Length: 125
Image 1 (tube, one colour):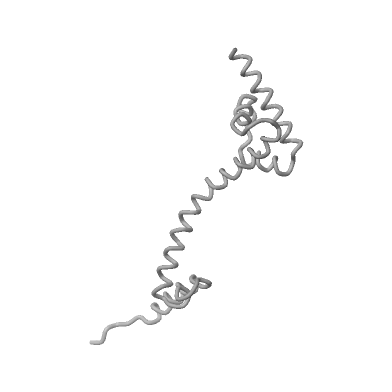
Image 2 (image 1 turned 90 degrees about the vertical axis):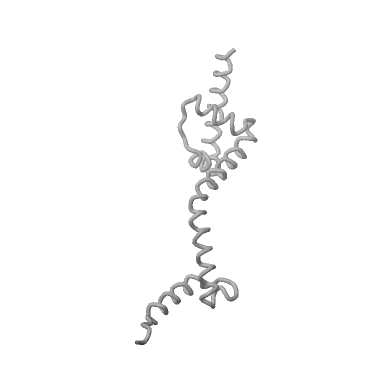
């Protein structure tokens, strides 16, 4: 008895992989054998980086906030401590957007943070 071959399923599977490998360099976009490896690797990186994106964005927001604080005579950690002392609850994304798009509002926050820092310093003495 002849071996059953499911050519239709095989062709669909190959087509699906090669479609996903479109745009890859060299054999990885043309030959199934190499395309499978490339697509698997791309999936691994995509999975990992969807999670990594969250920490990367937080780092970016912190850098932006720090860059906006420095010209006003305060660093990031003192600014955040001042906001906490003043009980201002804004997340880093919102602070970053304020620093970029609304400098006046950000300056007001910096002043409140400085005041709160000086009040906590005077209480501890």
